Length: 417
Image 1: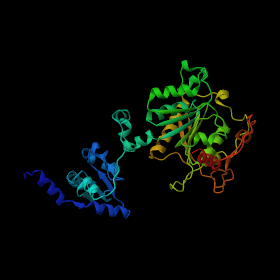
Image 2 (image 1 turned 45 degrees about the vertical axis):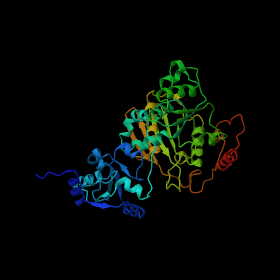
Image 3 (image 1 turned 135 degrees about the vertical axis):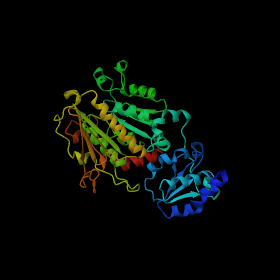
Image 4 (image 1 turned 90 degrees about the vertical axis):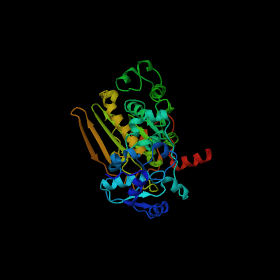
């Protein structure tokens, strides 16, 4: 058996693979060629800077994880390390695994920087954060980059009750940076059967205050913003603006239509859910974003064009609800929110998940966007927030409601800025 020293082993590997210069890689990427670039350095090297849009797989995990990132054996793979040595050895191993188009980057990341090409220095997790969120960062769909997205995200919860409770707990535990909570109610002893944000000692307290204390105990890093007032046509834009996503846990139709319309007009995704006795529903309303290439899906009005007659649908207070049901449904809302914030999986856009816990069946119904929808259709006719109590056949609020347009709100923001 021939014994090789380090230099001989590297030279042998380089003789068996293809190498590109940094400029060759840059030119092919500018030409929009389908290339997967893999950084095989260690994490402490990666966080000090890396080639944009590269996949991070430490050298010790490359053979174990490469198929998850690039299952196609014929797609060009460009491997780089710090100086081009580890990448040459790694490229040869990938060829032995059946990858037919593996390239090692000459000079590695140092060569890329010295060539004057752009690189990215990512924000990094602190040691405490790395430990706290380690079960997230192990998931390739999340990783450090996804966790950092969560830490910088802002989610607004409409309601700190049955649905808002589990959703808030899991979003806080997941590391969502800012959680806004809209709820003007106080904790009642009858809430404790299902609203797990609150305990016996919280009875009589503001739900917002109770929720904030619980969430800060779960995760002190989370910033909790409380709104101890009902969301209305007059304040909806102000409340929702600035958040990345809204999660609706309200229990009345005027609020549902209001939040839907406001989110559509502001272009903010809405994770919507409802519960009734033993059944629950969850869906995602994703507004259209031409600039971002997001087609968008249906909205609440596509699914429910008209509200039911007043009194036809009893509330939980009137019909009752299985205490654990909002735990299931609210947790699914939290999952959908995390998928949207991080950017993985297939959110429930255009799909309505229906749950019946009496026989434990889960069904998904397809929901199409209505081109004639007055809010999200091709030619919207509802372009400002209205009196939603009146729209739902209920007595109007005691204060006159003035229609509010999103353009008017944005003009006000500019003036205040």
